[in-house]
Image 1 (tube, rainbow, N blue to C red):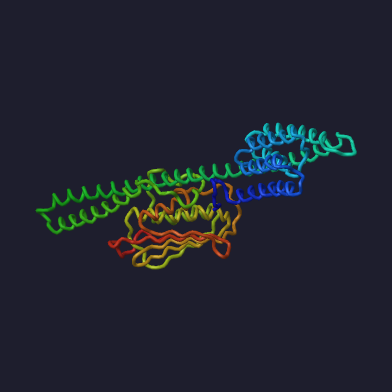
Image 2 (cartoon, one colour; image 1 turned 45 degrees about the horizontal axis):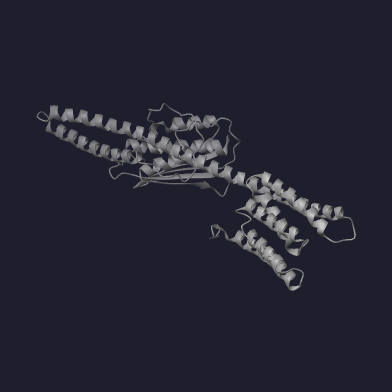
Length: 405
């Protein structure tokens, strides 16, 4: 980060101070050598002081230096060593002025000044030779300033374009997160609505069987309580999803067509069909697992499905057709881990596979809803690895469920 002094970068201020010091050196050298008097030295010092503001007020500095040079001509002092300040001012106007018109005017004034200086310069040759010499110097300085002005404006345009693209990228990322959270909220709403329907049916069963079959009624009441607690937890997650989204940490993936209707909620029992679709698209998928599959709450089951779907979509999109993907579902006592590792050795895909969201952004949002963790990054072999760890609820059953693939 550049340090500032007087509202300007320290490096620029130091350089301008050095330029001013050089002009002051010429002024003092001429005065000590007896080539200039006090008045001429005062004019030179004024030029040196003006050059300190050549970057922030180039046109004003150019006009002031030109006026001081005119005083020098009227006084008949002739060209002096500190007149290098005129060339510095000309360069600054051409490079830093808002309009190139100011630089053109400054160049014309400098050429006229060179002609007047040639007329006042004693020499053996004709005056026009001196004027031509001064014009060459002015032209060289003017072209150098124009070249650096063009480069400076080009760099500024690139910086502005990069800043614009960064703002657009952040806006698209925020929109992707908002869309993904809306999708998650809609799916969780369906889960909660299903749970409420189960509670109503079981509650009606309790009412009709309470007197005739108390044992069945107690079991139904237990189902109502368990379903209610699960629905309350899903509702808490739903409210959390609908909160204001944070700034995303990574850019969104490109928009892709949905693999299923918007309101359809897939389950893990459909994983084999999902894998077959990606195999038909060109991926070589090997699926493995460890541990005993559990019966998951509907929302968590949907999250696992979406993570698998997005991982395979990313592999097909970036690793390409023909890439090998190793998919693993590990069931631990307190968590389920989804891991997808590709070798990155496929051919570019023309049409990406259907996706269920927005790539890594969507997976990160879904995993975050269930307090899980997601890691993604390249492998040493040149492929890509995605791993999601989702904590299991304490009430998850131990019997084998629909999650077996």
